[in-house]
Image (tube, rainbow, N blue to C red; front, side, top):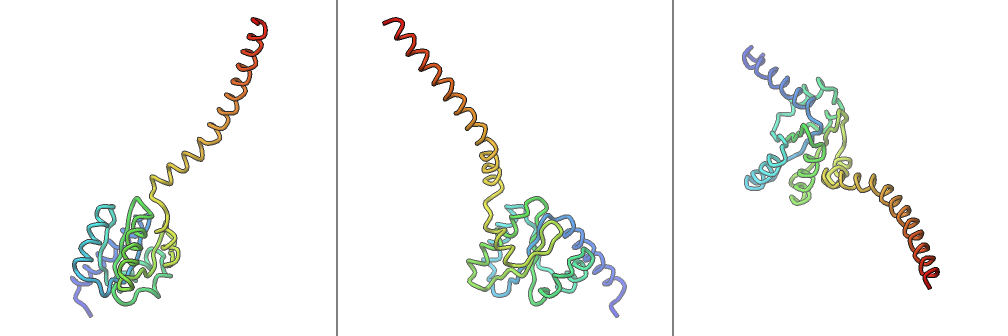
Length: 177
């Protein structure tokens, strides 16, 4: 039986981890076995630049936190080495960065599972998330889609006015001639 102090520290760690998972818009679990220090340092730098929190976590602590949050379907993937990347604001950032890194690592770094908006997702869904364009591009596309009908209507209305102006100009020329 562990002593009371260690047990309290572990309970506090599980509570903090479950709060982190609840507060995150998305998270990705990865197996980091086989990567070198330089690659890990670069990965952490890229994640920090995107405001993604990345930590290596013991599977036992992660199991307790996942149960507490209601992510019981993560249990089968909590084996081996596990790192957790979470983002509070951007649900695509962890998937995009870790997905690109997993591709570059040629099998040394693999995505285990993840969660988005309170729902557990598997690696294939994370790959779909990673392939999404950045938020700014999606917003620009949405804005373009919304403004397209309005600009089309303006063209049609301008075409009618232009046609009327041409017809009036032709009538004026006939009368002056």
